[in-house]
Image 1: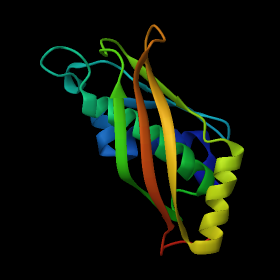
Image 2: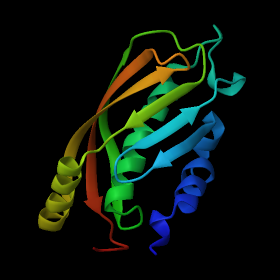
Image 3: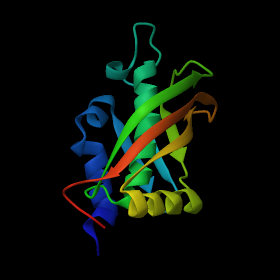
Length: 155
C-alpha cells in the first residue's frame, strides 16, 4: 500500500504536518477519490475582534480542501501546487464551527494528470463552499492553481 494514500498518513499530514492548519484548528474528516472534507472548530485563535471566524481562516479552510484533494489524486511528494489567485465571496457571518466539502471529480482529476504527464505542469480553477454548523453557506471560494511536477519525484 502506498503510504501517501493511507487514511492515517493523510490525517497526520493535514492535521499536524502543516503548521498553519494546526494553528487554525483544521481537521481532516475524510479524503478519498470522491471527496475531501475538512472541519474547523470556532475558537479564539481563529476569530476576529467581533467574535466571528476570521476571513483569512475561512479562506485557508476552503483552499486547503482543494490542495488536499488534488495532491491526494496526483501525489503529494511528486508534485507542487500553489495558488495563483483566489476570490472569496462571503455570504454569511461565520459564528460557529465550519465545514468544507470538495469534490475534485474524476474528469477534472484525469485532466490534471494528463496535463502533468504531457507538459509537466498545468493550471486549474477549483471551487468550494464553506458551511456552518447549521449547514448554511458562509463563503464560496474560487481559486486558480499552478501545479507542476516536483524535481524530487516523477510519476
